[in-house]
Image (cartoon, rainbow, N blue to C red):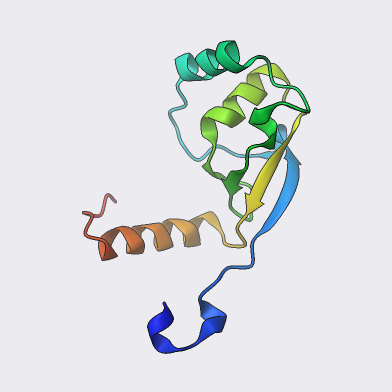
Length: 113
């Protein structure tokens, strides 16, 4: 946080990469097929210029998906070789889960272990 006066620990050096959907790993065990199909019907079959591959998803350094599972599902059903725009956070999934849990507790949420 900013209270310690050190600016160097107040940001994370993330990068945007384009990564094939087939290389990404789902973290969620429940990806709702009805939502994936609804989005394909609503927005069309994903292709290299479509919004679904050009809207940023968030991934860990091992390519685990933090946010964007249903967009990833649309691409995997349609064309897994399409590349997706990814915000690569340079932490392992275990580190990100720990950070997320700590943040949740700090804002008053009950931990869900």
